Length: 140
Image (cartoon, rainbow, N blue to C red):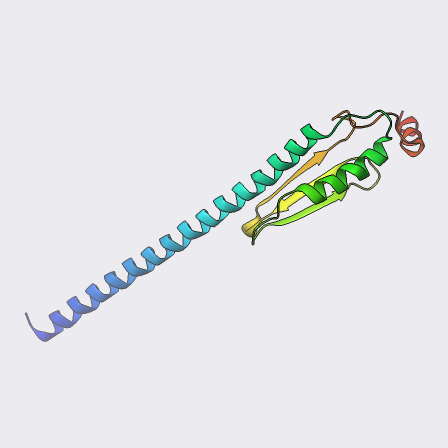
């Protein structure tokens, strides 16, 4: 073997080692990202399960209007949901123009889930407010 063959062989060997190291690093990075998204998804699911458990504990009432029940449910959920960990953002809001609550949870990398809660569907309210009744008649 002459010197040129040794140099070419060494360059090929170093190139192969470098490519393998880059592939290993990108695989490790992808595994870490997948693990983080899995943990965030578990966090999001735990938040939804906690909200469902609270809905099962709330006593039905026909004394409240659905608007008042939505406000009450909003404050109960805001106070009782467990804190979210880093990387997960929670937003609990009343949907404008309706009696629904919207719980939105978002994680990194475009992970986003939302759920609507209706006090009427859970049996937490009685008569609908006059504003909602007018809107219902207008829709008919």
